Amino acid sequence: MRVAAPYLMFLGDVPDQLAAKTAQGIVDWRPEWCLGQLRLPGCQADLGIADMTIASAVAHGARTMIIGVANAGGVLPDHWTEVIVAAIEAGLDIASGLHARLASKPAIRAAAEAHGRQLTDVRHSTETFATGKGTKRPGLRLLTVGTDCSVGKKYTALALEKAMRARGLDADFRATGQTGVFISGRGVAIDAVVADFISGAVEWLAPAAAPGHWDLIEGQGSLFHPSFAGVSLGLLHGAQADAFVICHEPTRRTMRGVAHPLPTIADVIDLTMRCGALTNPDIRPVGIAINTEKLTPDAAAALIEETERAHGLPTTDPIRFGVEGIVDRLVAEFPHSARA
Image 1 (spheres, helix red, strand yellow):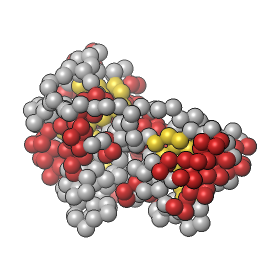
Image 2 (cartoon, helix red, strand yellow; image 1 turned 30 degrees about the vertical axis):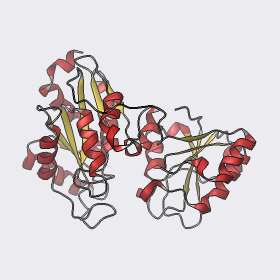
Image 3 (cartoon, helix red, strand yellow; image 1 turned 120 degrees about the horizontal axis):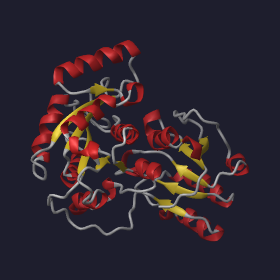
């Protein structure tokens, strides 16, 4: 994938902040690439960067407009077409993480062809994947798993990469979703891979490596989510995870988009170990990451202490408090990785 920066982040008229998580992730981890945001009337998300028109973004040097939203089904609403065409006509490339391909809209395809602009659908890989084999391969792999969608699996994996590299460990973030691909410039949007090839795609993404090398694989969905558990299970089997970190948002009572209640952290640990043992019998939990954004600092600290005591695992909010405790646990559990 080659997406030219700087970016104008397009949020459309999304109904809440979580619906703009693709754009928010890019702003959080690659702020130097993001010039401003373009919001339509009624938009309920704000990235905390400058609001810009298409003309002002082009004048400031923008090269690509990113469709930075994540909606149910990954659809491209018809009423966004006019704005996207205007951006193309003004000289911008367009990149999207939606399931719907940009060129599926005739007006967008025609504008791109007429003006020689690039359309990039990061969710659609050009690779051809084999089916997963589940054969033991060298190297170490950590997978972030969740009690729900959008609970911090990507942020946790990225925070671990940063902290582990600072400690001299050999570690690479492996993106499995559209936002992660935008951030890292490489990866596979696993939820767009045909089901038979999900585990094989993860084996391709995190192949055999040096014995002490860590691939930090971004998790997707939840084994308990009725919509996305199939993706989560294929990802778990392909990852052949040696270690996993459980990610949780404590204020939710039902999983996103459905009426089902959230599983407990203990439920997630148990099912992840039982299912993951198919391709790695030695799979084990090494930490818990809690998204405490909606809690006060005191409430967050108390919950983290309580959770760590209850489960006997290092627990943190990766953004508020860092991930050093989880890295310490990894080094203790896998000492050969510290000598890589």
